[in-house]
Length: 615
Image (tube, rainbow, N blue to C red; front, side, top):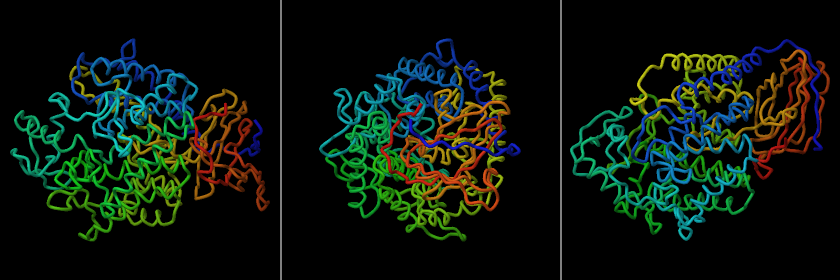
């Protein structure tokens, strides 16, 4: 391997953040096996009930360990990697027995939940892409959506559409059965009724601060009417949520480099871009079996499954558009694909109105027009800015009120998506929050301790546990490590891929992740450079590592500068040492107790992305 090598020379006091980072990694390595021992049987299955009906639930099983292979790829223990594979198999077996999983993939469900299930599987490619069963599964799962699998004809190639919002390894689900929603009718009763014109009793109630009509799904007569309407109006439609399937197809591309997977991702996203243009710049939420917007909804472009009206509104429009656009950028290098979700953000801002000094945007559209006005959440605008590094995206992001009020706060906890700290990290990068590394590492260690306390005091009856029970106490979380070591945000949770500036490989152990005793801190990034500090806290043993530009080697490091002052490697006033690289990887030697800071100049999205590892 003809790689440039840079060796650290500085001897300096160990920074607080480096010691805290290594402590967090050690704490999670120790906690995870105890969590597994508490909640699983000898075969790895959950200690839980014998039956679980309906189509919901396997996503929650997978979510209970979803970030374990990612943690390994960042530098967690090899033992957790082995456990994560065994537990994926156990969840698959258990939910196959329950009836949700078929051929190792959900038999049928929507891409909100497929996305949650699949991130666990995608991380295996980052952990070890040479594991042949994973590669075979990746191609088989992709085949469910490319038309290659005769048992799962979810894809209409002529119209370039997914044939239903409920799809999976058994193909499109054109009619939901009575039992499909059985486990969470009580949850759906808390959301707005799906349509305005149903002949069911409703009552007005609060929903995210808005007064909406709700219907009692728990009543069989009400449920029968709703189910008939869902099947008649929604189940033969393509919906924006299906764009999350682009991650499944991109995953197959990352294993193979087969261009037909790249074409599928681009073709499907561009099909939705065409639909947006045909709908006056607004993304429609339902496209009928003949490719016509509003075909099963009396011509309405709203009212589709997980669409503008029901249940969440704008979130489930912008999120899949963002995931798909980011996937297209990754696979093609063409950042103009980000214009597709940008357009929806800008249209909503245009539709907004000022109230009490705040600019509010409509999150839902019903038969009465735009409603559910509230401040725009910055999460998807933030992901777009991170990928583009475009000043226009930064301006849009900075104009969202939340970025100017609560973004300095390091909130306790982690959130379901382990993604609640983009704001203070963003403020760290722009200089407003210099103490963020210490604060986030402190908070994340505290969360490990809190969850382990909850596990030790969990004396409930497993028969009574909700399907989310285990994921709520999983002691592994990766947001802080991704931000600090890789210089990137946590994934878009409902099915996104990992988009970061840097990855690391331990050349001595021949595995991904930071070597033992090595800590990393990305302190600056812009459109064409990334600054990272590396520290070996071991007083006796040197470490060697490779730095890779991008999670999938999608960037090129053109040259590296040893940064004056950041780690003391260069004498004050001296010209920085510069090394020409022109490679997606760089080798670094860290003798015992040494540290260094590097500014890595980059050409981003210049390489074909791949799971291929250099060790």
